[in-house]
Amino acid sequence: MFDNTYNGWPNFETWNVSLWIQNDEALYLIAKSFVADGKDYLDFCDYLIEDLGHIRTPDGVKFDNPLLDVSRLNEMMEEL
Image (cartoon, helix red, strand yellow):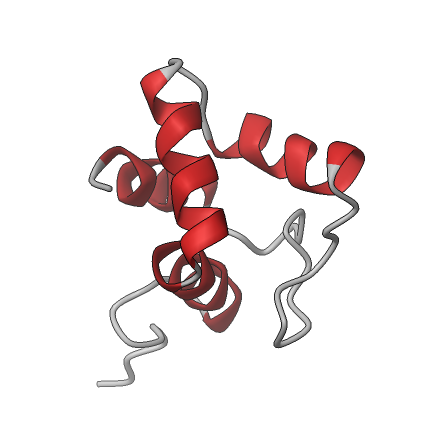
């Protein structure tokens, strides 16, 4: 049977964005504050792109990539 997940995540893009949020101190703190304010990944993404000009992870994955599993990213952020 073929497993089409990436390190337990739905795909590389979702894994990569999650990895950076959890391991970059600035992204981590911003994500935590968004969750504390009742906001989700899409709000976080808009802030990164529109207010900070951060379009991609250092590995080149866009924070608004249509392949991202936003529900999984929301779950991850709630667990921070």
